[in-house]
Length: 212
Image (cartoon, rainbow, N blue to C red):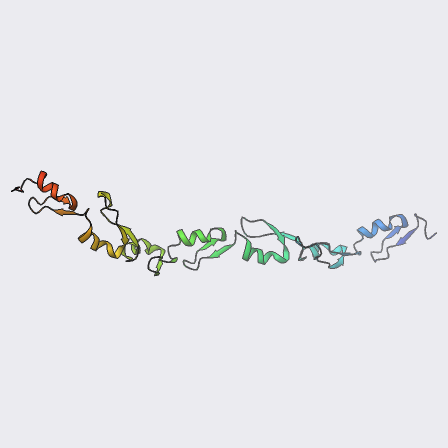
């Protein structure tokens, strides 16, 4: 009689239903009072799992808090699924769609764009001049480049053939004293002539110079 498949017994785990012997095993799998063990586990180490025991009828409630259940990142644009226990770390440290506060201008910028913002867009960003080691705001960089004594620049007479290249602090003296491509006034006709062409100008072109 105890083994007869059609004999009904009351559910032994507490739901109160009368179940036939042949359906009892199936019922245990569906019974809201059955105790189940959560098998959600880590992606990288399957031996690390949740292991929480709960009544089957509380499955939804457990899913709402299970640290090993995958949930979507809530940062706009991301949508990557990560274990609930790792969400905070993902959002703060790994997610490229996390909004970061620029320490210079205080604007909110996506993590994926923060370096480009700091180097090319943020007008309040501070960079160090490689020539003089002075800290300069990005919005003052162009002005600084015209003033920095250590920045290497070409002689302004490059167009006429000079290839001199030196620190900006040396360029003025070079142009005024040493550059053979600088232009000077002909002392006779006042025509401006490249320094290294003055002899040929006096001999062939100057209308006021009298050759002895």
